[in-house]
Length: 238
Image (cartoon, rainbow, N blue to C red; front, side):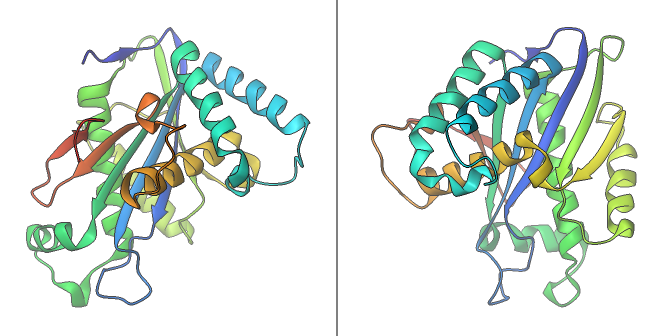
C-alpha cells in the first residue's frame, strides 16, 4: 500500500491509549495495551469538527463520545465518511502483554520487579510512530508541520518532558513542531481516538459481533509482536 501524502499545511496526530501500561502480573492491569492514532490535515480536522457538531446538535452535547454507545453505528458511519472523503486516518496498534513482555524486558535488560510502566508506554509510542512514518505517512518537512496531541494520561510534568525528549531524540522520526497533552473533554479528535480504540477492542478482540459495522472499512489495525515486528491485521485474517 502506498504511503499517504497530505497537502501543504499542518498535520495533527491525536493519540489515546486503551488499557494501561501496567505489568500483566498485576491483578489490576489490563491484558492488552492499545495505542489509537487519528491523523488529519488541518482541513480534515475542520470537517471532523463540523460533522461531530452536527451529531451533537440533536443530543446532549455535554457527554463525551465514549458515552454514546447506543449511537455506535451512526458514529461509525461518520468516521467512515471522514476517512473516505476527507483523508482522515484511523489507526490502532495493539499488543497482548503476556506475548510481548518477556521479549521486551529481555531486550531492555530488566525483569518484572523493576519494570517501569511509563517507559514501556513511551516505547510503544515510539515503535508505533516509527511504523507510521516509515510505512503509512509521507512527510515533506518543507510543506508540512506536525503536531502530536496526547490524551492527558501522564501524571507529572517530569513524565511529559521525558516523553517529549524521548521522541525528539529519535532521528528516525520527523521533527515535531509541538508535542502536547490535553484533556479529552476539550478535544473532539482525542475523543474520537478513544472511541476508535473501543471499536477495535469490542469488534476485533472481544469478539463482539454486529454485522452492520465493519471496522476494517475505516480503521487500520496493527499487531505488535514480542520480537518487535509490527504487522497489519487484515479483514480476512483471524
